[in-house]
Image 1 (cartoon, rainbow, N blue to C red):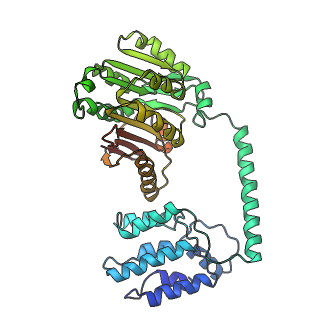
Image 2: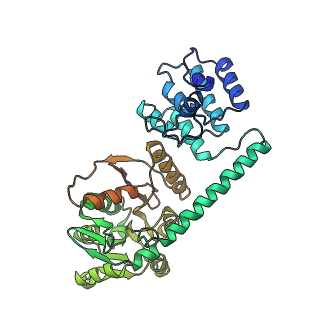
Image 3: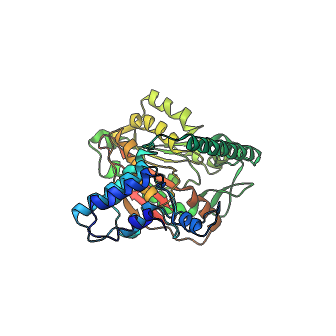
Length: 414
C-alpha cells in the first residue's frame, strides 16, 4: 500500500486542508497516478510485473469507503476538494474495486445517495474526461501513443469480427426489418436466433403506459375540444398488448405505426385493418409521422415502443412529438439506455432530464415493482440486459412520465 492510499483512508481527524490537500497534491504532482490501485501497489511490493488485475481499487474508492458519517461541514469541504483534485488528475469513476463496486456504488451502499459527495461525483462524471494539469513528458507521450495504437488495433479487430458475425437484429433497424419474426407461446421472437422482441410479461408495463397517456383525457383535458375527438397514436405494435388496452378505452381515432412486414401481416390476420376507428401507418415512423404533421392531426396520447432503436432516435422523435401533441396531450415512450451501475443509472437519468429540459419539460421518478414471471426467462434476461427506458411528456404542461426497467427494478415517472 502506498502513502497515497494511506492518505485516502482518512484515518487522521480532523480532516484538514493543511494535511490532506497538501499531501494529496504532493503525491499527484510527483507522479503517482490518480488511478493507482491497491492491487498495483500489492503487485509492486511482491515484485510482480505486468500482472492482469482482477480489480481496480483506486484512491477514489478508498475515500468513498472512508467518509466519516459524523464529518463536520469543514471536513466535508476538504473531502469534496480531495475528490475534485483526484478527478482533475484523471481519476476514473467507472473502475471496479475488489468488492465489485464503482465509487458511486460505494457511496450508494453506504447511504450517501443524494449527498453532496454523490452529487459531486455525478457532476464530475458529466464533465467527462478532465485534461491533466501538467504537460506530458516525451516518455509519457510515447507510452500514450503506443496505448492508443494498441487500442486502435483492438478496435479494428473487433469491427472485423463484428462484420463476420451473423447480422444481429438488435444492432440496426434496417437489419431488424429484414429479420423474420414469429409469434409463439406468448412472445414475439426472431425466428432464427429466438431473441425476444416482446413478451407477455410486459403486460403491466403496457398497462402503466396506457393509463398514463389517457390521463390526458381523464385528468388534464383543458376544454371540450380535447374531449370531442380523442385521438391516440401507438408507435410499434409488437404483440398488440397496449393497442388492445387502447381499444378498450374506445378512442375516436386510434393510429398504429408499424414497419415490420411480419407484424403488419399479424395486424391483418387479427382484423386490425377492419376496425372502424383504427388507422394503420405502414412504414417507419420517421417516414409516416411527418405526413401527420402536414395533415394537422393532433393526439391526446402518443405511446412509443419499438425495437432496435437508440436514444439518438428519441431525440429525433421529440422534434415530431412536440408538434403532434394537443396542448394537454401526453407522450410515453420506450427506448434503450444501457445501465452499468446505480451511479451510472442516476447519471443517465440526469442526461435525459437535461435533454427534456431543452423541450421545456420537467422530470420526476416513482418506482414500480418488477413483474413476476417464470416463462420465457431466457428472452426476459435478454430484454433486461438491453436496459429499457420509457420517457413521457405532457404537452404544454410539460410533465414527464418515465417507465424504466433496470435489471430487477421498474421505474415510472408521473
